Image 1 (cartoon, rainbow, N blue to C red):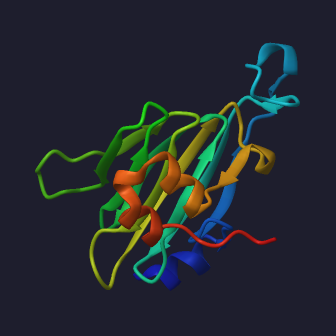
Image 2 (cartoon, rainbow, N blue to C red; image 1 turned 45 degrees about the vertical axis):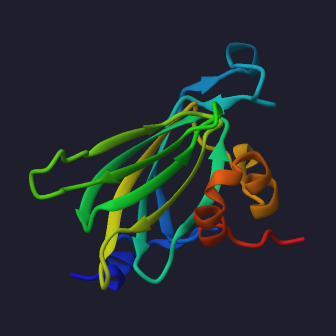
Image 3 (tube, rainbow, N blue to C red; image 1 turned 120 degrees about the horizontal axis):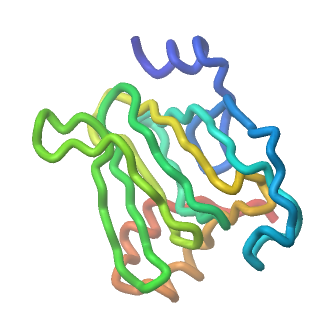
Length: 169
C-alpha cells in the first residue's frame, strides 16, 4: 500500500494547504454564534472529521484555524508537525509509531497556532485523521504568508520559507 492506494481507496481530493483529504463526519448539532467565542463570525457544526494524507512529495503549508484541531495517526511514516504558538514558541512533534520511542498517536493543535507538517521518511506517506471542534469551515482557515510569519517569528525563517506556499491573489 502506498500513497496512491490510499488516495484512491479513501476517495481523497487535493487540499489547498497541500496533501489530500476527505471529510468523513460533520455533526448535525449546531452551535449558534452566541455560544461561540468572538472569533467565529457565524454558527458552526459542533464537530467535523477528515482523513488527511501527505506524501513525501508534498507538505502541509503553515496555516491556522479558529478552532482546536486534533490529529490522529493511522498509517505510514510518522508525520513531522511544526507548530509556531501564539506565545512565540516553536514546537516540533513526531506524530505516529516511532518504534517504541515516545510514540504519539494524537496531537492537539490549539486554535490560533500556526502549523505545518511533512512526512518524516523518504519514499513514504502519512495517513492521519483530523477532528475539529467547533467544526471546520473554510472561512476559519488562514494560509500563512512567509513574509508575515517571518516578521513574527524571525528565528524560524528557514522552516517558514521551506513550508509556506504563495497565496493566490
